[in-house]
Image (cartoon, rainbow, N blue to C red; front, side, top):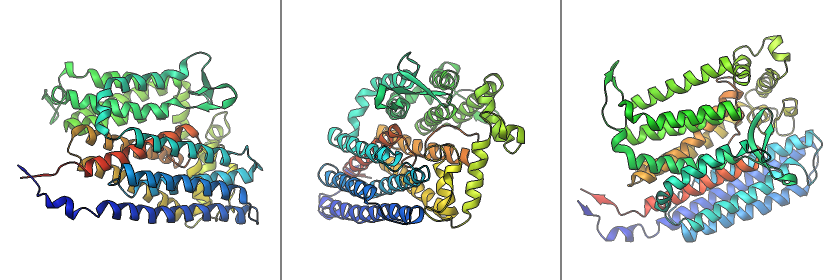
Length: 455
C-alpha cells in the first residue's frame, strides 16, 4: 500500500472553508426557524409579541455562533450538518415548552422555557469545552476502564441515601438542595459508550471466537458470555432498584449494537435480545411498576385502566392530542397540549404533533434521521476501530432513545420515562446530548484528517 500523492492536501485546501461556510449558512437558517417558532407561539397563544424570550433566544443564537467560530479554529474539517440540526431541534423544543408555559400561565423568569434556555446555554458551553479539551478522540481510548467506572458510579448515584430523589416513581435523579435536580444517568451513557468502545476493541478477538452451531447460527463459548451477562445484570438492576425500564433498555441496546459491530456475530444480538426480553417479562410478572407499564400499553382504552391511579390516562390523552393535530396541526399556540400530563418533557412529541401535525413530526423525525445518519457515516469513514465504535455508539444512543420515547407515546412499545433528545425539558438531557454532538464533531474532524491509504 502507498499513501496518496502529496498533491491531495492541495486539492483539499479549500474544503474546510467550504464546510464551515455551509455550516454557517444552515446555522443562520436554524436560528431564523427558532425565532419564528417563538414569535408564532406568542401570536397564536397571546395575540401579541413579548421580547423577553426572543432576546434570550438571540443570546443563545450568539452562543451557537460562537461554537461555530470555535470549530473554524479547532475542528475545521468537522461535519457541517450536526451543529445546525442540534440547534434547530433545541430551539423547537424551547418554543414548545414556552407554549405550554403560556397555557399554564407561567411566563416569568421562573418559567420552564427560561430554565430550558439557561440549560441550553450551559450545554453549548460544555460542548465548546469538549472541543477545546479533546483535540483527538483517541485520547479517550486511554481512559477506557476509568470511563466504565465513572459510568457505573453515575448510574447508581441516585441510590445513595440523602442524595437520590424519587420523582414519578423512578429514582434516577440526584438533588442539590434548592439548586434543583440532575439525572446523572444521562452523562453515564456517554461514559459507558466510551468504555464499551475501548473494551470491545481490546477484547474483540476473544469475543469473536467461533463456538457451537445451533439452529443455523454459531453461538459463542460459555466462558465468553461474561461481558453480556454483566451488562444484562446491570440493566436488570436499573429496572429493579431505580424503576426505570427505558434507561435499562437504552444501555443494553447500546452494548448489543456495539458488540455486533465489533464482532460481526448476529448470535450476540439474538442472545442479548432473548436475555433482555426474558428479564423484562419476569419483571412484568413480579414488579408492580413494570406490570403497570405493560397493562397500560396493552389495554389502554379499558375504562378501569384509564381511570386507575398511574393508569393509561396520560397515554390516551397524548394519542387524542396527536389525533387532533391531524396532518397539518392546529398551528403554534392553537392547540391544548397542556391537557396531557407533563407535556413539556415525556410527552413533548405529542404536544408538537398536536400543533404541527403529522407533517411537522415527519420533519422533526427527518432531522433525527439525518443526525443519526451523519453519526454512522462518521463511524464507518474512520480508519481506527475505537473511533468507529464510538461514533456509531453515540449516534445509536440518540436513535434508540428517539425510538423508545416516540414508540411509547404512539403506543408501539410500553411507555418509559426517557426524554426526547434536544427537544424535551430537562437540563441533564440537554447537556448530555450537546456533549454527544461535540464528540461527533471531533470524531468527524479527526476522520477527515487521517492519512488516506490506497492499494
